[in-house]
Image (cartoon, rainbow, N blue to C red):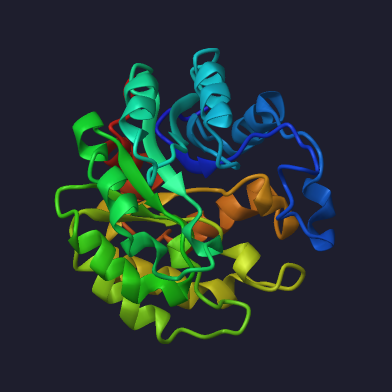
Length: 281
């Protein structure tokens, strides 16, 4: 197994209907437990040696669970958890979780907030403004339509590292590049922002997507961020709705096959190591 290859985005969960209401009928295949042994098998089959685990629920309990789990395995190199960034006592949670070295980042599900400008609220930004003190990344979970607000949000925190999850969710199913392409190019001008090659197939036609459908989006991400700021992620097990783990790995390998060995090494691991300050690599 290659220890150099890292999956920068996956989930683990113990399923219950109350906490996973976002799983629609079309997502019934996700309505079960997805735990570490099954994920480790997927990594092994695809030659991936480590991963960054991202929270699936917005609870501090899940953040604690993932951090405890990370202590039991070398596979989990880091955790992107959740803390109530808009809460006046957010520092208390950051102080608690930052005691665990494998906490590497924080994420809020911005794209489900009814207020598109939620990320611009003062109390939320006060919380984000504390992350740099703890060497924590902020993962941006947004749709294409949130990119204009994201420019203003990121500009408020020029020394904070940001990672755009799922290439900011363009409308791949509709084969639309604009305005996502132009907006992503604008976001990429901010050198404190990285981008994850993840979540693409579930934005495409789950049953009929092809590598050709994804190619223009790969090209835009690479041309805007460059391999220095692009990292591989699977979005497993949500990935399973549209592709197997090996199929996604193979798709990404072929998309970047013409790059130099050094450029590929950035996408497959070194960018994630840098962005998340991963240890033991």
